[in-house]
Image 1 (cartoon, helix red, strand yellow):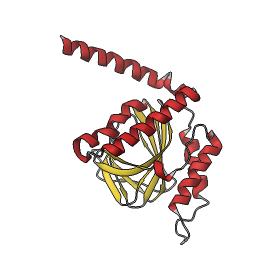
Image 2 (image 1 turned 60 degrees about the vertical axis):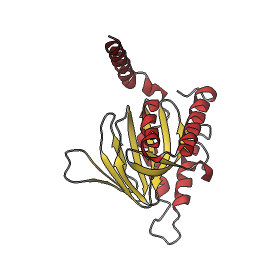
Image 3 (image 1 turned 90 degrees about the vertical axis):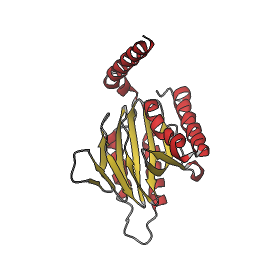
Image 4 (image 1 turned 135 degrees about the vertical axis):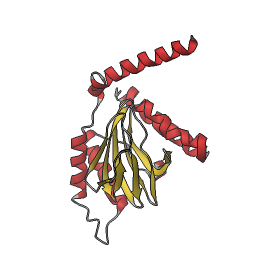
Length: 223
């Protein structure tokens, strides 16, 4: 009886969350995926990746600054070396820095210096992955050929969909997620308990995420 009650409660909660996903939740979004892609492409047009003077860090900093100019420093965090953290999720390992985190959206710079491959996870959110340098490969379960995303292209992973993905070394991106962000967090945390045991990184990730969600909710009124 207890199992039935819990299952029923979870089903009702999922139903209402899914209803709000397409009705109320989008009213809280401040980022436009199309505009974010355009901002990235505007910055990319000023950086020549084939030049001997090309700097990935300069590119990432310029993307952050372009976002802050458009959306405001109150919503976009500063680029700080000490706030880069490892991320282990779905068997893939990468590096990320949180530019924005709220209950309905997050915006991060994500990539890998050495290369990675894994599972995208199944999320209660739409994910927009704009490549800034390098590339991302992805495939649905039945795909016999890979999807290839190059700088300036956005890979849209729809809510509830799942893919295998890989990024060669030196690939970096801007990732925008819109939906029920707290539901995505376990995917980014569970590898700590099942494999890495890197509790320092877990603690830092939890702190940075909670700090930004709290700031945006309390100070900015951003759900």
